[in-house]
Image (cartoon, rainbow, N blue to C red; front, side, top):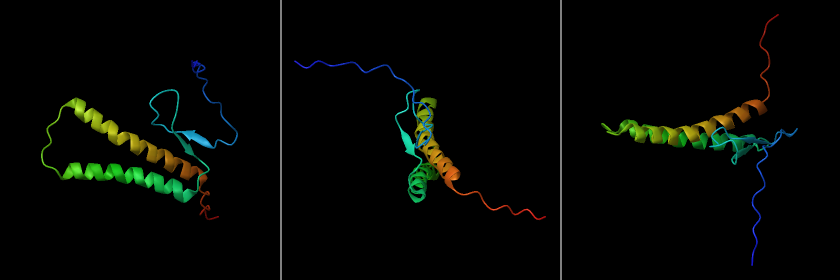
Length: 110
């Protein structure tokens, strides 16, 4: 007969010097399960961010093209959450890109 061991108590991850994996802001609880590989190639990070932002943009544009939409506050709340999650993921990816790109040269004139 198989015996099962319960999961050990959750211990939040400590900051690793490399900071390779960053938890997404849109994780639904204090125990993150979705992460961004901050060392991924810049073009991959940009593509992933753009994909999420364009997906939400397309949904919102389609909704804007419709006539009157009758719905209650629960449906609107669910819809807003549906849009906010991939938008937040895209913003997290853009934040990683911003940290990885070199600082622009100073244009100050002396």
